Amino acid sequence: MNQPEETIPCMEAAVERLVHVLGADCVSRGAAIGERYFTNYGEAPGTRPLALVRARSVDEVSRTLALCDALQVPVVVQGGMTGLAGGASPRAGDIVLSLERMAGIDEIDRDAATVTVWAGTTLQAAQEAVEAAGFTLGVDLGARGSCQIGGNVATNAGGNRVIRYGTMREQVLGLEVVLADGTVLTSLNKMLKNNAGYDLRQVFVGSEGTLGVVTRVVLRMHPRLAAPATALCVTADFSRALALLHAARAALPELLSFEVMWPRFCDYVTAHTPDLRVPFAGDAGLRVLIECAGRDAQETAERFQAVLADWLEQGLIDDAALAQSEADTRAFWTLREGLAIDALPDLVNFDVSLPHGGMQDFVARCEAALDARWPGAHVLFFGHLGDGNLHLCVSVAYASGESAQDVEALVYRFVGEAGGSISAEHGIGVYKRDWLEVSRSPEEISAMRRLKVAFDPRGILNPGKVV
Image (cartoon, rainbow, N blue to C red):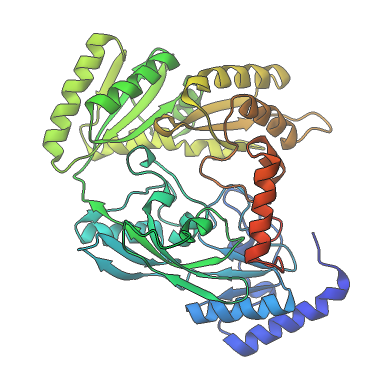
């Protein structure tokens, strides 16, 4: 949406003010703004913003927001641009605030088992620093090399280890946040127990840059894990996969990941990923990727192998392959990550949460309805069964007048009927905003709007997103 023409001179004046206050090396405009700052992951470039601010300090973030708030110029904060909900997409009249220069480890406190990280630090860089200190982080994502800690916090990232450690919300002990008017809230708490008043930290986790800009984060560190033991299993149907999850929780205290892939997903990824060699190709059952990690790799692998043998005897699984090398492990995860799907035309990605007991019925109804309406469609299910997070990728050939919104309407209707959530870990952004009422009551949405007004009364932070 373009800004009204009469506001353009005011906005241009705001950019000039930013250049004056921050310096020309901090503010870019026009063709100097690279496409990565207005291109969502897996999409064509969007709209070039009015200006780009690459802040180098908390003070520069504060001054940027104070100026934009005074002039009522909208600001979109960005991390690694790996989100899938359009939450960091700018409009033509927006100022993009990138935190990529504010990167690095501020402090590692071994006694408190915490790491304080600047918001622009990539997840992988934080993981490597924590590993070098003898610990591990609780969050891991496929986009670890490019997603940033600030974005992970803003979207309450989940990933592959939620079954063991929880989401980003459970990892954050303290935050530094700059409010819309430039006020800096510094609460870099390291304590597990702190009941001194309202827990403001949790207001900002998952707020997608609409309530404040996260600049520093205190994260929990966990005991360092040895190399994981990884297995790819085949089980006949979803009921057995669910029984397998219960068995894994009971038998494997080292359980780290529990991922499930439906047959159509496996067949497509295997056929379209060059040089991918994984066992059980063409098998009709569900694939289950299970990963365990403890302090001793050999001990964990031996226990895991014994448990797999027991599951075979019980009939919980039809077959299993325990990774014998790093190459095996990479192949199993390459299958699960399913990057080949990204090349499908008009791809619509869904990230939903569902009660475990209703998941198979949801899959069956969704698949049947999509196949009936769009014969020949690619309908591919996979996800983190351990925490109830299901991903669905849909690629269809639309008839005249149809669009992705028709696919969304169908899928989200089933999500609502199942009592699920339209967003498990990707956030709401702009793509899911119109569907929020599927998972939230009118009273909840009203409370969210009041919270937005309280923290951002002029509405400059990421306007048009979430609510």
